[in-house]
Amino acid sequence: MLVLLLATALCAHAEPAAQASVRDTVAFDQLIRRLDNGEVALNSQASVDHTLDRLRALLPSNDAYRRRRYEYMYCFLAFDNDANGGYAYAGGGIEQARQAGDLEAEANFQICRGLYQGRVTTERDALPAYEEGIRIARRLENGRLIADGLTWRGSAQSLLGEQAKALFDFLEAQRLYEVAGNTTAAQSNLISIATIYRRLGEYDKAGDYLRQSMVFAQRKQDKQEQMVVNLQLGFLATERGDAAAAVVPLQRALALARETGSRQSVGAALLALAESSNARQQYAEALQYLEHAAREFQDVSDKSNTGMLALQSAEAHAGLGQRELAAREFDVAEANVRHSNNMRYLAELYEERSKNQEALGKPSAALADLKLKMKADAALARMAKTQITTLMSYQFDTERRELENRKLAADKMLKEQQLAALERVRSWQRLAILLAGVLLVLMLWLAWRQWRQSRRLHRLALTDPLTGISNRRHIEHMLHVAVDEARRTHRWLTVIMLDIDHFKRVNDRHGHPVGDQVLEQIVQACQGALRQFDRLGRMGGEEFLVMLPDTDLEGGLQVAERLRANVAAARPTVAGIELQLSISLGVAQLRHADTGAASLVRRADAALYHAKDNGRNRIEAAP
Image (cartoon, rainbow, N blue to C red; front, side, top):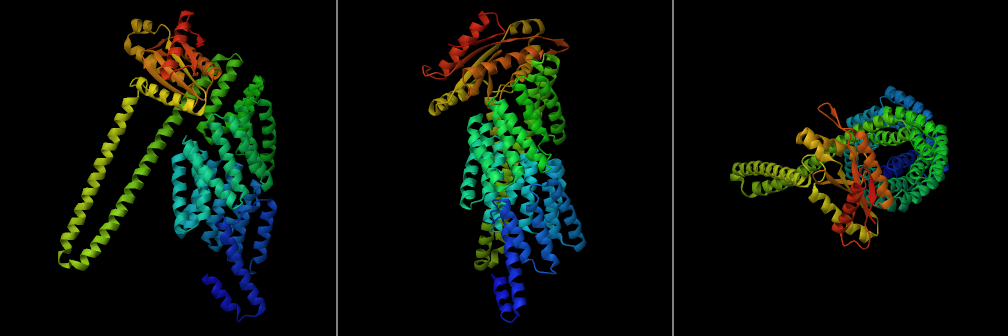
């Protein structure tokens, strides 16, 4: 506002040409600010071109400072369909900004280079550019620029599986946007936070954030953001096990991407649709989507999705029975996914390639891939545990800081009041404040220790101490909840009862310590056959219960066969002794006639004993 008043005062005494120049400068600065803050919805390539032309027309002549601002905005907006061109343009901008000593422009060009570096190679390669941009922005103490850099770095870290680090970046960016009063950027940042919660498995929280973001994107008529939200809603449905529900939001995302003219976004939507088609076993449809997606990415020089394209193509060809072609594509996918070090994609790749190897009659290769899959799952579990611990630590530290800040604010107010009324007892008041602070720290420490101890005891009460999976009490409790939820929402629910055949012989011949080690290895083999939302619990001895939400009897029989095959292929080795074991399984789907969880388990148990009576190492379905 002050800038506008000053410009008006100057124009009153200036020549007409000078007045126009001042007006253009003010208009240029306003448009740059609105673009920086995300307040301009660019819904098509035509609107991007028009905005850049308008910005160039307003650019004051012989103003090198503002020219660099125009050029870094051009870097972000003009190369959506030319990643190589954008990367080269950003590199030139960095050199020019350095020569001019313009740190703000250099920081923006660094962030812009990271954007295109992630497309040309991998997101991991983009991190140094983002970090350099953030470093410069912190040196300038430019909160909005710091926040912009954090959101880009957070997106890269999230794609690489570093969800805790990414969430920290997004939360810090959110705080900086709110401090600066930039509500538009803060609302857009919620999409990134929702993405993190989705990848952490917090689906309900992710859904809430995405619905809120969709309302805001529709309100400001931003088709690009609507496209991103629909894409995330599609991923959310697929990861929840409802690939059919993903089709509508993904089709909307594709239509919006085409309207905006962003071919990179079109490719991303097509790739997501291919993944959904594979999940629905529509393999020919998946290949059509992949062909179009590959063309879009190739035309914009985007190589970041090469591994995922090969992986989805391999899964589709495997589904169509084209096993040899699928095998070659799995190898291509592995080379690319290994380069990006994305453990989620590696785990998926090894599992699907193992099935393909088995179908090709290569049991040794299939077993090797299963072992690699187990290693990837173990790495993901360690990563998840580390991230959860880090997030809990961050949450505790944040709450502690807020508590300390409130306490300090209260102490400061009390101190000022007491200084005004009781100047003579100032030293006693300071001592009281110090003691209160020490007491507060002590109480916080005691409360934290009690909370940690409570959490440990709670885990012990719900976990089988030998295998680390749910104990009988916990799995039965989860099953009661699942039965109630399945009946309330009219969804499928299936359980599997399984028992290790002739396990008593292992204990009798080799001793109980060997038997315990065998149980641990059998559990690992079983977990490698289960999906993300399946739950495995130990009922006692060598008997286990598997709970399969959103799964009918046919799906349960497929999971049971994977369990049986995994255990048969496991061949646990203890003290140099290789054992070949098998399991018998009974499968039962929840029916209206079941009185509850106990009735469902009894039917599965009866089917299990029927399997044992019929020769073991087999699966029986409950009638």
